Length: 361
Image 1: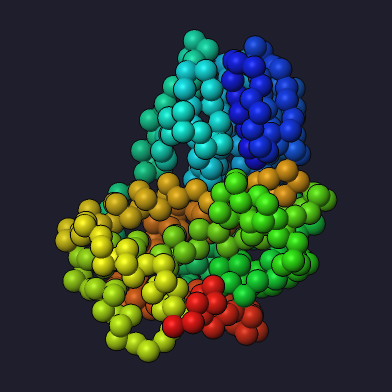
Image 2 (image 1 turned 180 degrees about the vertical axis):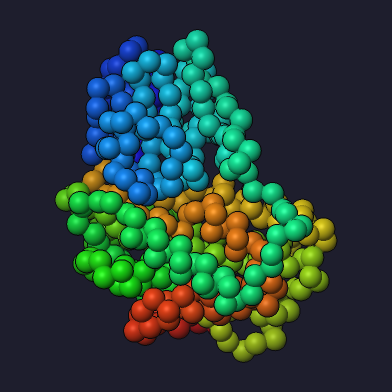
């Protein structure tokens, strides 16, 4: 789902392999986009097929992971409610390929075209995440129920005729998503880890984990699980500052747990050297939310459509209201994620690695 739109001559950028001239614009795309008239689209919407959404000219924001590029009148871009991909622009260009010469558009902003020039459009306030002091604080059981109910609903509402592949991975997030398909009795096959497309790393760190298959299909992924389900240690520390809880001390007080080796290798120094703490709860909450939703990880590539249910604004917002004990259980033990797996398909717990990414404490 990579695109580059410009008034200029074509650019030589990977993975752009398709080119169209439409209404004085050069539109470059990766493979496997669909087209209806002067409208290009790719991805999936929840609750209906993306093709039906486009054919009915229903461009209202929906959940999913998709983009619609409409050149039928004034050039316009429409996407899912979490905008699962980054955006970069100048007056003549709009793309989701990282380009240091272009200006990034942070979530929840988008781009509009006025007088044949692209401009930053301020986001819809309903999509921004702000701390609500009156909001309920959730315990672990309540968060687990919220995630289970959400995953079951979004899985049942996924409308696709593509064959589905699930990563044969010991990761807790991919196992979480696969367990929802098990609960709903939906058919999928397990992918071969040896087929990972490591050569795609230039697209973003997550793409080296994709299975390299030319046949059109959908891959189940757990992307954004760390960041939006309370398992990124830095994000969790920002939330825990208000409660005077030091994650470094918490990990030092335990001999081993699911996250300890990974924490020591990747996050310990970050937390020790950080120069910003949030003693006001709203500040920590809002900062965490802002950073998390701008952490774009996975959209689609060529014939691979990636199912990314864990990038969901509603779910992410609710998780941020977890009580400190629940946050600690998740960031140290993946306690929430494992409890969800146990409810959806307990047998899959045996598939989860003992330590995150194999980092032994």
